[in-house]
Amino acid sequence: MARQQFAALILWLVLAATAQAQNTVPPSLVAIPPQPLWRELSLPQRQILAPLQEEWDQLANYQRRKWLGIAQRYPYMSADEQQRMQERMRPWASLSTSERQNARDRYREFNRLPAEEKSRIRQHWQAYTSLPDEEKARLQAQATGSDAANPKTK
Amino acid sequence: MNEEQMARRLSRRLNQGLPDLDDRTTRKLAHARKLALARQRPASTSRLVTTLGGLQDYLFSPRRRLLLSGIALLIGMAISFYWHAQSVIDDMEDVDSALLSDDIPPEAFLDKGFKAWLDSSSQR
Image (tube, rainbow over all chains, first blue to last red; front, side, top):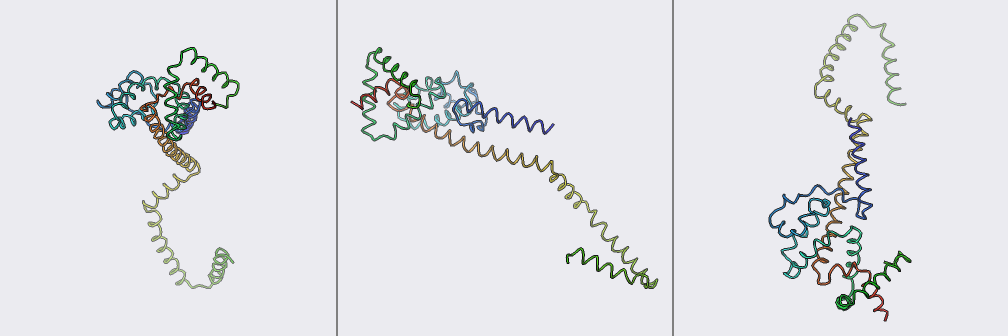
């Protein structure tokens, strides 16, 4: 009996680790203990994380833990930062794990750039958003085509 | 010569004179042996010693030892997984809180067209 339970535990660990690995997140994240459900959150936490209310109970434990950490930092952000955070929470949570991971990797690279280069990219973004939609679509198709031809250059 | 051989030789030498011992000495020896055994028995059957011995047998039987090392391995794995997971989450929390509150939106890092446009404009 004990041996069967032991074998089942090992099997569960292996399966959970494999499932996590397929989602491109480190397998160790299965070790995060269960995190509170929406109704178990404190009032300030619910107010900060309000955009995530609908999907909260379906989020993985590690994601809930991360959002709770962000909620702790929230009161120390400026009013502008708080507003941007509120607006972006939901769209961010609805991205796929690999999309989020790619964006994080590129943001890390961006942060390593010198200040002038960063402000150049910020200005370019403003200019890019004002391009006509057809031009943006053409650039996206071009980038996707070159990605497919040469998948290593992301 | 090891200890066992030495003991065997000694007992053989002691046994050599046995037939020549007189009755009185034999009786005295028998009495002394009885006394020694009587004193030894309670010590060896003391409850504490029995319990400890039993516990040792229980814990260190080959099957138990395997089970215990398996449990120790699992606990070690869980601790190292937890420690690693916590550092991954801390890192994610750092990046996400900065990325989501930055004045350049996350779309700038998701949009492949923007990256292509940026690359081409820096080559110009």
